[in-house]
Structure formats: C-alpha cells, structure tokens
Image 1 (cartoon, rainbow, N blue to C red):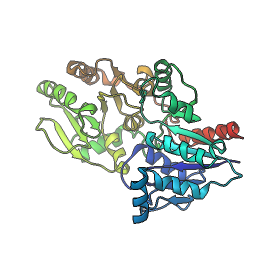
Image 2: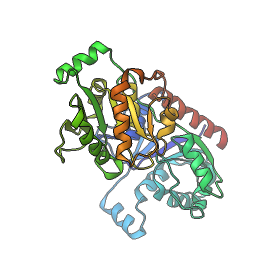
Image 3: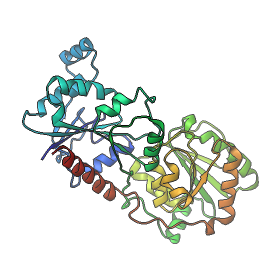
Image 4: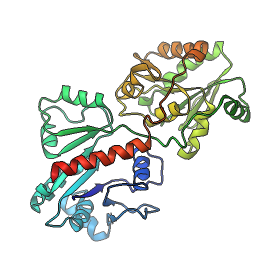
Length: 364
C-alpha cells in the first residue's frame, strides 16, 4: 500500500479560522488515511498524525536563500520520509509554487515514478493561461476540484488537459450547523432584543470582491420603507454608519451557528469566482433562506436555484433590493428543504478516503 503524505503550507490543525483547514482537522481526527503531514508545527499537534515539521533554523534559512528555493524545508522533510522501495501519494493544497520544485526534486532523486501527485484546488476558474498551464497538468497526476462546474470551466478553457480530475464538495459539521424550531428561534431573537424583526446576515472579510458595499447600498433603500429588518455584518469592523445594520466583528467558528440559527436570510453577494462558499452552506443548514450571486461554484452549491435565490446580475444594487423585498413579502413560501446529508463533513471524509483509494489503484 502506498503511503499518503500531505504537504501543507498552513499548520494543521490551524489555530485561526479557515475553511479547508477545518475540513482537514475534522478528517485527521476521524478515520483518516493520511500517513504523514509535512507542515510548520501547530500550536496543538494532533495525536492521530505522524508529522514532519518544517525546520526554520538559521542554517535552513541560509540554504533556502542561497538556493532560491522557498520550499527547501518542505522538500527536506519529504526526503526524510520517502524510501527507495515504497510508493507514495502526495497531496498539495492550493500551492502552485511548490509543484515545479517538487517535480525537480523527485526526478533528481529518481523517485518521480514512485509518487502520485494530487493537487487540491479550492478556487473555481483556471489559474494558468492556456498554453502555460500545460506543463502543470502534465506534471501532476490528479487535480481535485470543489465543483463539477469548475471542471467544465477548465475543460472549456484549456486546449490540452492531460491529467485525471475528481470533485470533492466541501462539507460542514451538521451537528453544530443545523436548524432550530420556530419557538427556539423566537427565544434567540428575544435574547438579542430583535423579536418581530427579520434578520439578515452577511459574513466574510470586508474586501470589495465580497460585495458588502452592494448590500449596504441596497439596505439604505430598503430601510427607508421597512424598519422591521436588521442586517448583521460578521467579519467586518464598524466602518459605515447605516441604519438597521449591526457590525458584529470577528466571531469564532464555533459560535457562528447560533447567529445563523437566529437569522432568517443569508446574503452572499460575492463579486468573484468563489470555489464553493463554506459560510453559504453553514447558513443553509441552519435554516436560512439564501440569496447569492450566480458566480463561480455558487450556482452548483445552491443546485441552480433549487436551494435559494441566485442573482444573475450581482453588480446591480437593484437586483439585491428586489430579491430581499421578495423574501420579505413571500418568505413563508420560499422555504427550502435541505437534505441532512448534503455537504457534510461525514460525506467529505468518505469522499477523501475514496479519492485516496482510487489513487492507490492508479499507482499500484
């Protein structure tokens, strides 16, 4: 059986908030199939994992600078693991920069044929231009994407696409992110002194591509006629004075469920090609009606409108104003039934194990 090695630029588990790092933490704490993790030392290493920590000694820093190889420490750790008579599955997450250096390292050591390289891409659109990307897809053995639509984008864009592809949807912990009863929701609203209000949520980093400014423009127009609404902005500090808007700042992931469970509608006005959207499915599983941009992987996540409202022209403020008004006027008729096993960590863990099992068959 080949050994599985995960090379991560981020310490695992990660002490801060992160989408894919949370998925891997849950996976590594369950029935996982990863034999080694190469990363910087985390604050609390997992007992279920064999680590090779990246050493950043003065000598290593000098070698890294002299060789102009920013991944020297990772390759040094990998060299300590790989044996002449064994095969390996090497997983890389969103780290394009290491691929060329990794291939050169394996070829120099005469070990390239022993290794099956899986590249996990958490974006959506192709990241290399057409002909420049051919070397990348010739170098890796498999690329794992978040959605089928992302694969179709790659297939349409690249003239030559000589590698295997798989899709692994993101998943969340539905023991934490789940709906509450109408009575519980009313009690949660009462606790926040918002009984009788419709609560909307936006949750992200406040960067222009996340679309908060679009929502705030729509909100000003809406609030003139409707004072029975509140917008919770999570992840952004108070920068703008807007009636009916509460800025809640950074909230730890473990505390997010109660905010989603209190709320009625989740707004996802992304203006970039999102790979998937973890907060979107967290809110969805907590019983929120979701209004989201029809960009990137979002339509597939919301099953092309079956699980929420897709905004085809998300840069138009009026489109958001219209969609929010539609929810306010017809919210009771817009509820959706979300399958309990849709986009869960349990399915993600099983999917990861299946991807490793298939890679094992390919390299054996």
